[in-house]
Length: 225
Image (cartoon, rainbow, N blue to C red; front, side, top):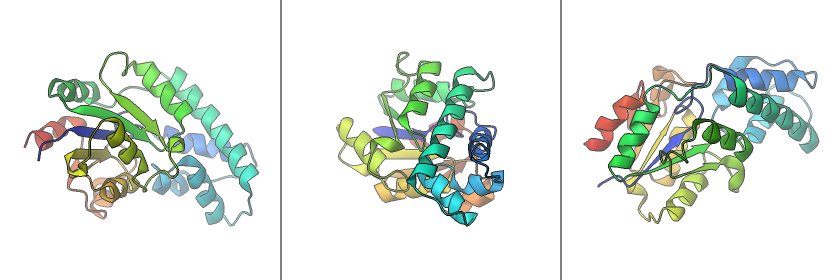
């Protein structure tokens, strides 16, 4: 079956990460007197960030309420917006723009999704001008649906807006366990994991994606098959 839609994750997949998300989490928690390790955050990459904050607080046996989660989340958002707006280290991941251009040439719809809230996604897409350059058709963030990953709602919304009714015509690409499970839960025809982000090849293998690639250049051969 032919591919009509490719849904790609942002940080760690189409955008260089270099542990920026984990560092921002640490800074946000520290602003509220809570010291956490990067290793506590990395397994939660890809999840909706308010969910991830709650899980980290639970792991540290810290009693919390919605206000604390919101305050930590706001601090995290501020850190990430500053990073994505100003850091020279923020770049498209290797081969990303070449892949996006190739997909568009093939008439395949291109969408991004993310565990970030929309305010951060907006900054990323605006910085790279991906919409204005016609490299991306649309993007969606976890706070625009009822539940983020691993629920399939973001992919389902992207399918609806693209007029796609058969999930087997969708390819999902991401760098985390929750990306893989999101693709499976949405019934995507191909689920691809990439080692450029938070998880290693051996970690990704545990979740049985259809393919594991080291960079987005390799995705072309998978789609062209």
